[in-house]
Amino acid sequence: MSTETSVGIPARGDAPQAREQSSLSTAGARNLSSTTKSAPQMQEISSRWLLRMLPWVQVSGGTYRVNRRLSHAVGGGRIAFVRTGARVEVLAPTLGELPALRGIEDEALLAGLAGSCVQREFRAGEVLATEGTPVDEVLLIAHGRVERTGTGRYGAPTVLGFLAEGEHLGAEALAGPGTAWGSSAQAVTTGTLLALPVQAFEQLAAGSAALRAQRAALGDRARRAQNTYGEAAIELSAGHVGEHPLPVTFVDYELAPREYELSIAQTVLRVHTRVADLYNKPMDQTEHQLRLTIEALRERQEHELVNHPEFGLLHNADHGQRIQAHSGPPTPDDMDDLLSRRRGTRFFLAHPKAIAAFGRECNRRRIHPGTVEVHGSRVPAWRGVPILSCNKIPISEAGSSSVLALRVGEEDQGVIGLRPTGIPDEYEPGLSVRFAGIDETAVISYLVTAYHSAVVLVPDAVGVLENVDVARRD
Image 1: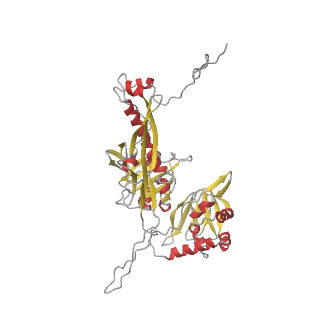
Image 2: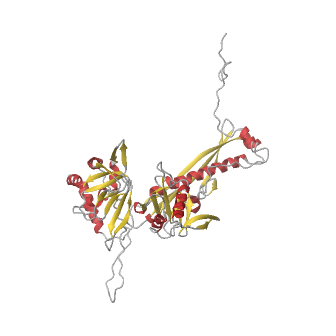
Image 3: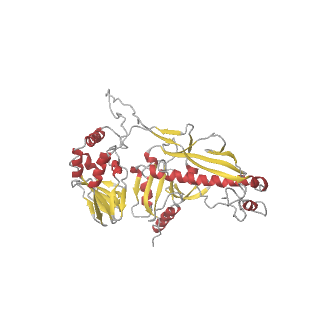
């Protein structure tokens, strides 16, 4: 007897194919249609202080351009490394962060320099450089912590700062011969560095016209009049008497200012028509589905504002505004150092565990940091500046995190958020909810879209205290 059946009708004994659920089931919907109940709850919701504290600027054309005074940038970013077991190698393209190599696009040249680097292990207490001695190699720190010290006015040693992974020492020697160490460097922990011999660089420079031109341009930038921030100087005269000739000046601008395009976070919310029709009282199912979806989008927005590689605050903080913790956990001294690097700091932003670590350090020193009121909530503060929690700041596997200090607002040349308003089907500022149709399974679709970005108007608007230890210490 034949077992063939008509097209579309399964043969007897065949199991029907299960269809993956794509919307809220009626069983789930009934939980909101009977008994005294709560609205649907969501554990993911956080305080989202960054979204609440950023001044939001309307962006109509989808792009925001930041015009600045002309700056003579000479590198100074971080070097990246590749680890293969115990072997460490420098990632050749990132050598362009050294001042003498900034803008060099010759991959073979950079690869040759990377191949000239010699791996070296150092131990805690080892002296890596001595003030006043000739610089014969550039030290690229791959792992560990290094303290820079100098000599004070009265001969006493002074701590100038700390260096960590990705930072370097002695790069000024690549600009020309006869350079001496301006400070001493001593290892605080064990670690690994790669040493780039200056002699190897000189040999490659002798055969590279591009590298020779780069060194000449570097010397030219050093001779140009500029202020302490690297901006083209505005010539002024003050304190003169009589008919003193006045300088002639103008304010030069960057010819290729940076532009920020709005980023996007999207999802498609699906609700079955049966749920929307029959299980819609006393609570509106569509409304609560949408509310929780928007909460998740807002959480993702804050994560992007902190961590996005293009516009995230952690990635866009200027290298000169990054400092290392003095002893591991965030101390009052570290917070003072971070606070002193900019005017008008509006608030600190830190992971809750970093805030707790700072509180422990204050307790250890018998210091009461105080509290302030922000948007109706009492929050911890240091020197009157609120310390706001943000669980989007990552914590590394080693238990270290970062603390940010922000000045905000266009008027103060700070950090601003970008979003459009007046977009089609706008549900909230910068967020739209569009009806996207009903499919053949009677499921309604809504396209939920949020646009956002962040801008650091001038480099000192954001400071980062890096590699703070958030683990509890006995």
